[in-house]
Length: 237
Image 1 (cartoon, helix red, strand yellow):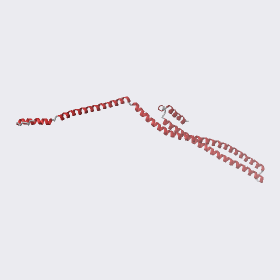
Image 2 (tube, one colour):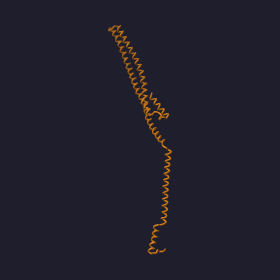
Image 3 (tube, helix red, strand yellow):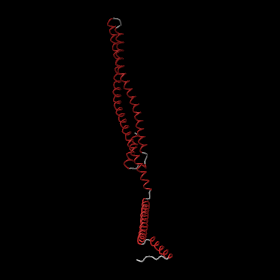
Image 4 (tube, helix red, strand yellow):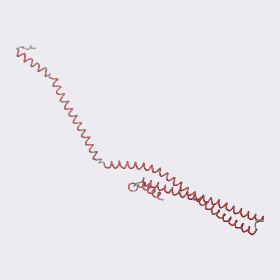
């Protein structure tokens, strides 16, 4: 069957992990399920035909049985008429014999119909088993298809991610990041150095200014100059 061949291919793909080099497993599984459904439709059609033949054979069994009984009754009626004197014995025997021949023919047809019905019934049982097996396989593989779709999505996503990762120049990127990190360290160190220099300069100036009050010294000097101009002598200590 076509679907078994396709499903066997899917099994090979999973065993050898060679999906990229084979047919799409999703499409293959979907096609396999379609093939099984076609087989199911054909099996159901054939099953219906065989059931119809079984029903026809059953009807024939009843029909030929009734016919045989009818000819047997007719033979008895003919003989009774001859017994009563309503018909010549010789003619009655002839007609009764013909009726009994028809009866035997009907019984022969009935026996043949019974054989056909038995054979058709066996075929029906076998075909119903095949139909049930196909239905179970369809249900199984429809569930497998759902799982397979999920697995393929995960595989595709993983493959795409791995491809992207494979295209990245990892060594070059890491080297660049390390250089940037070092540059930041250098900038931070330089900023700290400038800060120390600024703090150092400011501290010396503060010490000098604290040691010498420039404004007060200058004011004292200016005061002495004015006193000299005015002829005012400063008091001696």
